[in-house]
Amino acid sequence: MDAIDLSLVELLRSNARLSYAELARQVGLSAPAVHERVGKLEAGGVLRGYRADVAPEAVGLGVTALIGIVEDSGADTDDVLAAFRAMPEIESCYFMAGVESFLLKARVGTIAELEQLIVRLNRTPGVASTRTGIALSTKWENRPQPLPTPQV
Amino acid sequence: MDAIDLSLVELLRSNARLSYAELARQVGLSAPAVHERVGKLEAGGVLRGYRADVAPEAVGLGVTALIGIVEDSGADTDDVLAAFRAMPEIESCYFMAGVESFLLKARVGTIAELEQLIVRLNRTPGVASTRTGIALSTKWENRPQPLPTPQV
DNA sequence: GGCTCAGGTCGATGGCGTCCACGGAAAGTA
DNA sequence: TACTTTCCGTGGACGCCATCGACCTGAGCC
Image 1: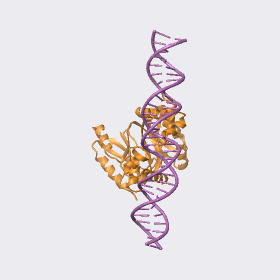
Image 2 (image 1 turned 120 degrees about the horizontal axis):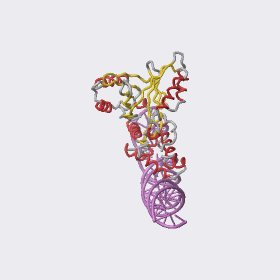
Image 3 (image 1 turned 90 degrees about the vertical axis):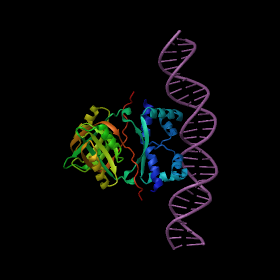
């Protein structure tokens, strides 16, 4: 993981469809060299995949909510997690420090669907309570930040 | 935005580096047709970009925090937003319903850096108070959900 | 019917991805 | 020092891909 690897990661972070030839030009190596480096970054788990960034409203997912979850005292966290994982509306799931064990980011099409999701969450065994905040607008999301000083 | 467009979006969502030829095979069109459709989806703002999914710990961003912001009564929301935008650690910024006007997702390398970020946030004009939750672990993030029934 | 337009296929061509053989620098060993 | 090994790069070759232009086809409309 040297400076060139970092540049490659940063370039792919802002445009994952860059060709190897273009990457090669930008970092000053040949295309096969870049190809091998990117392959190693993928194999090493640094590059986990490549995703199109889709406007959620354009695909019928205009409602974003952030939901805090308080667990029951006797809850099995793994079971709760598995239940969350089975709900496709839950885009992100963080295990948090604090009273609320989880914070979920969910995306649905309508407020009615959000209501149904919250009901399902409250019915989930191990869930004591939920606290939902609605995002009126998303100012930005998953903005790639300039990478800090090189690691080992 | 028909069923084929939806498939293209879904395919690119799970792997943004698929070639046009491969996309064409998957949806049963020719490569030029797919090329044109994807171009229109990009131009129409449905596909906003393509991002590599990078393991944050691998680039020195091992600490994730979610921060709620309460605004001052007389705050200028645009100024506050601009101040947030200038802080690269803030990866996502949602404008929320509720007492906390904003919810920020921030990513830093160390707890010390998080502390500095929180201090800076509290010093920002227009910010009355902050409430920070630390993510002990990220179970998943930005999981692409199966797209719902086609739009117009 | 006949026009027009949107949106597709086909064919051509230059560039790209990817494999392979080779080379040179750095580190270890005698 | 000289030799060996390893790592990491380059350059060449070849087949596939991106992309452009020409043409085709069906729907909607005078």
